[in-house]
Image (cartoon, rainbow, N blue to C red; front, side, top):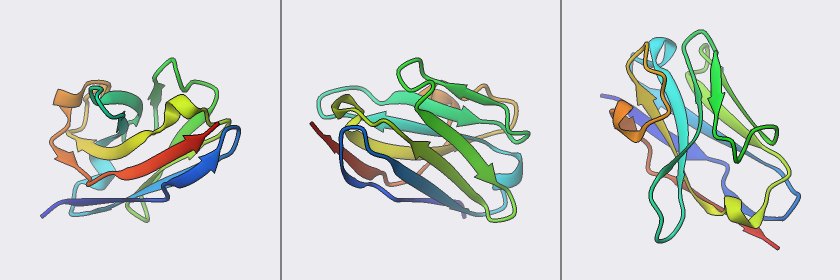
Length: 123
């Protein structure tokens, strides 16, 4: 059974930093494409970043240069380092796992999701 558990969310002032973690149980992590998405109230879930099993990465334009996605296959854990946070980054952040070979920028590519962690950036 596959489970994804996010942690590291919280309240931070604009310009601050947070590091999200996604711990994955089940025998999929090492080959999966992993991704971060976010959903603000009243908005659709949107792509933030993705990382393949060989650690090639993709980012949404809105977070390029501020966020960094990484993974530690030995720990079955993915991370999202978020710097220079803005109020518009406020959302529930979800981690997700997709089969290998997926580009990982679309919600429909993913078949396993975490429960989400709240990130709130105050101005």
